[in-house]
Image (cartoon, rainbow over all chains, first blue to last red):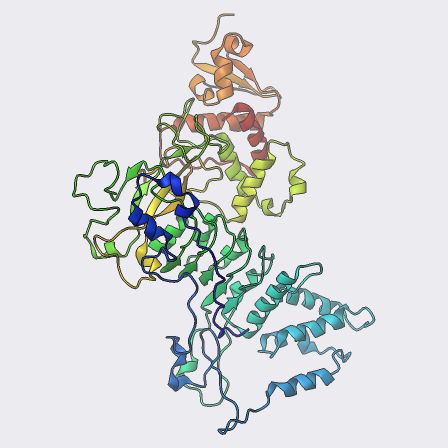
Amino acid sequence: MDGEIPLPPPRRIRHRSPATANPSATGLAVSSFQRAQRLSRFDDRSSQPSSDPALFSSDDIPASGLENYHATVSGAGRKRRYRGTWWGEQVLDPKRKRADFKDKRNVDSGVWMGSDESGAESLLPSEDGSTWGEDLRKSVLDPRKPGSSAPFLTEMENVAQTRAFRSAGESDAHRFAREVVGDCLDKGLESIDLGDFHLRTIPSGLLPPLQHLTKLPSVKEAPVSENVFTSLQPFLRIYLPNNSLSALHNDLFELSNLKVLSLRNNKLAEIPSTIRRLTALEVLNLSVNQLTYLPWEILKLMQHGELKHLTVRPNPFLPIEEAQIAEWHCKPNDKKEPENDEDSTPSFQSQEESSLNEGWAPLHVATGPITYMDMEGNPMGDSPSRNRPTPTPSGPTSPVNDAPSLREVALRAVSKLPYLEHTTDEELAEYPALLVPLLQQAREVRAAGGQPCSVCQREYVIPRTEWMEWWDFTPCENGMKMPRCPGEKLRPLPFRRFGCSFSCVPGSC
Amino acid sequence: MAPSTDSEFVTIVSNDGFEFIIPRSAACVSETFRLMLSSTNFPEGRTGRCVLEDYSGVVVEKICEYFCYNEKHKDQVNVPDMDIPPELCLELLMAADFLNT
């Protein structure tokens, strides 16, 4: 499909400010001035809209210059080329001829050419690959046609895999989504727009073929300029705004060359830590979801990865004023003062004007209390809720040590079993009941491609410690347009972090 | 027989008769063993001999290996992974639940 149509304007969404949701509880700490700020439509200081930017032909897509007018634009879409006379007479769509021809063509000629078997045709830029596939499908699946032989069927299987054909009994939304993705694969379009599809889930098998998406070379006419020698490596963009996604499929995180991902206006309550696998990600939009915290791995993508533009507001994030903080790294001045003794200016400010990088990098503001968990991953101590602090690191009783438990050691071995991901819930149910949840957990970890501890980087299955960290990443929210000014008000957001043993706690890394 | 609570070693026995003699402190990595061995009300506490009726010698050997592994790496930060053969991991999971470790 053509990506040149800008994304539709967002529906009117009532901004759910945490202050409105819970006006009385914040009380003391928040000044009325701050509250007024938080109630505003854009709580972004830069008042950047959270929606995805529109694409214009004049944008800095390399191939869009005037000198390259006739070449296919490698960006979001093709240039709209004017066809017709100068006095405004429009030429009929030249593609019509082909379609007419196709209508007349006998679809199943009964002749099977050897060259067809190689699937060479599918590599060509067919005008509308989906209908081609449909024709084939009809002719193959029609039982009255005896001509369909074994090679035909095997090829159909390949085609079905790569093109993500619909299967019977699928919802309309899934079917449309598959058509869109199939179309993008056919035409080599690197911008996949699945917005407003009412998707509740991402259908399985929809996204993996995109890993192998290749742009089509733009050589069309004889005079080959140097501009056509561009990389066929796609700048893969997936737009999933305005759907009803409540969970993300692991398939999405397999797309290691994904550059832009928009999940705006969905029903996501949590972003899995598997997002760390999207190492090429440059733009991520998570606004208008139900996130109360972000995975710590996103921070890693900003620090060490390519992530330059992260849009997360508005979301019902846990406000730092209401959260329990164990340690301030960047002091807030209107609170109980830990160890700093500088002048008290209002609210959070970044006071270190040290290195050049300082203004750009995410800034660690505070760390929440640690929740310790027992060998089964349940919070231990007298406070079961994760928002309340467990007393002290010496709190855990009984033989506590930093070595992994036998359960954990065995689960790590389980998660490396070769056949684990193919076991179904029914097969798991044959095992003793107490093993089933553990095995399911190991299977999830396996499906997510492992789960390294955020402190020591070792793979683990059952987390033993958990805490929140507040980080400010204003430059990333601005799309790296300007650094953080010294003395500027910080707007930290919570990141949830896990450790694999009692020694993997803040400050130990 | 004299109570063996002062003995430095305990014996873990598998259901096919293999006996593994390990330090008491290592066995006490398991909460279950610790309770068994610390009380004189249990025969295990008196004799210092624990029989694991459900597990064969191969599994019990691995369990005892884990006890020593755990004891050795108690206070270390970067603990190397212990090697678990895939055919044993399910039984070890069961044992971990029983031994509460």
